[in-house]
Picture 1 (cartoon, rainbow, N blue to C red):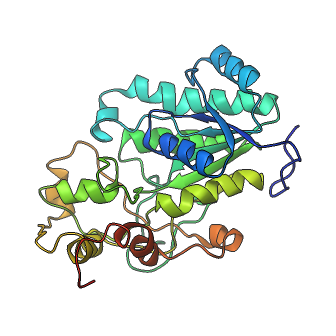
Picture 2 (cartoon, helix red, strand yellow; picture 1 turned 180 degrees about the vertical axis):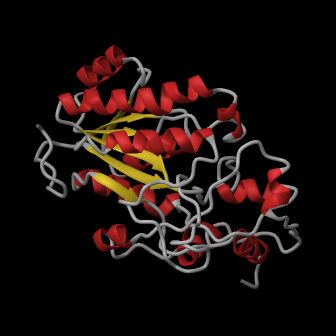
Length: 302
């Protein structure tokens, strides 16, 4: 195979990334990061479930690494997947597996942006305990069809030694105008629940994913900042740094269940493995202030 063992350094060949998900949020950010780091890259034009089109992309681009930021999350949210199950399977399961398989045949590592929304707090990992789910834990959340497909494909991808699976959760970036941004979402909701969760600050973690490719890391990684933050804690920061007139209302999970189709995942992921590899990784609240709220600050007092 063309990829070394987990953690081997990249070859002397100049980096060239093939990225899937050009029109998506993470895919777009990856392209901009490559430009800022002067890394040669190209976006894939093939459909993930079309093996021949992936083979043509790889032949044309000759990449050193492949990034998969394509996938179906549903618009406006994951409830879409409940009524579009075949479309969800086609991209999230068939497509992702096809890409992994094509790349394995060619000795290429795939950095796969997956989800950590495949767990929910339980008796062994109680809310507020600080006990997070580890990389090797079996997913226990199947409340939404989206999460169900993601857990299925993660299990199958364990057999592909060329895949680096990054469990992203509730992604946040400094672009507060982006409707996919978790902060933007909750500031626009009429009511929000208030539950501590692990989350991913993209401004800090996407550059780390590029470094992971350079180090040829594979396997499953909880890809969130250490610790948890609640909806209210984020909205309090928003009130402090961005809009002192901002107010919000809470409601319970039971009340939320009446206005959504599929239940949502709430959990804490254990980031020991990622922090060991990247000791500079900031805890979630510090990362929020440094990468999101300070750069966007509109108030004087914070």
